[in-house]
Length: 495
Image 1 (cartoon, rainbow, N blue to C red):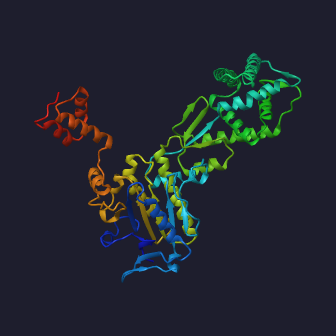
Image 2: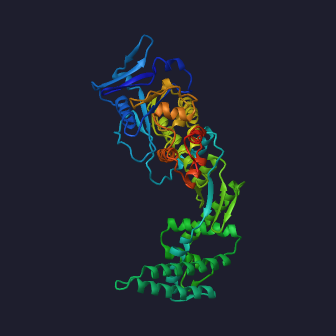
Image 3: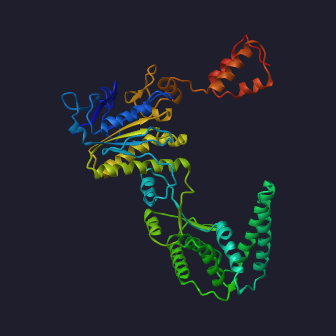
């Protein structure tokens, strides 16, 4: 099995290798990585999509030509030989071309919906380890104010209207009285003939305040330590999701803790058993996992999860524990998600016994901080080398499209293709950013707004007209060469 050298997509031919880059064999830990540059609209995304389509297409076409590096010369692959090559495509941006489903093609791009995939969460530590990230997810036991506002408070009101209702607690009686008054006022203001937005907002705030008082009272009466109260209410939240009868849940809760009662009530064994099971599993999860970095808040209790095995135990249990990504920056999460999704592509390729994989990444650095851009190719190279070994791939080739001059500095010029015809990348590897921006992107390193301000300042200095703001602007210029040039012109008079 040989590396692909080039692919012809219609009238265009893209080279994965050239005479010069072949001399750099072994520079990366995968077989090839090629970089594509170009302005917006230059065709980077279209080129990647065409490559994916032509390489993975099950139907032969006269316009398709894919070449590999046989000893004698680069030769066109037959359709049968192409059947052994898989393609993985990834783009983090929401606006991308629709790609057709094909047997040898895997679209690893994110779907942008709410992701609660336990497999993704469990893979976090493996990917984080590959990336040398000293970070962890958190396990959180919590309940929200909504438990009282939408479940317990309305249930208590319904319960209070039952025959035989009674309570020995004055705060409960006070709550019911105030709550009824607020509801009556809200009904009046929301009627068809009277609408007042400000009044409605004030009513909702009054309602929240009333429910908050009920919450404080309930917490004061629960016969447990603060953390155990949180566990109890978190377990109740979990039960309410499984048994979506709020009146039933609330009636059980107030009777069970003797906060209120009705003479006809008999303990709901289903709710009781589910609550006790959930509470017990939650306490066990805390006991087993809460070994460090414990954080306590009025409605939550959380701790760091040290391994993927702990996450598996949490997911397999009935505990009211949520796995949170709250400590992860958006950049870290985007990076971890990207490599996890790419790994899923390799899982698919291995299952189909495709041992030669072409990975096409369109702006994989799109949401990354500059520091993560600086590390991106290093991490990508290491990660792909790892999955190549793990899944016993014979050949892994990569094409990366980017706008980042930081990423460009990791590539020798012979491995860089700029789709803008006027720009030929030169001396890119380990070059200063300003040189890369000029020589590989064909643009200036200074922003257009700053350049316009400097040119205007230059004109005013030549005319001998300046102001205090001009002095401030001149002193603020970070480029020493530009600043010195503006200062030293003898014909200029600076005030």
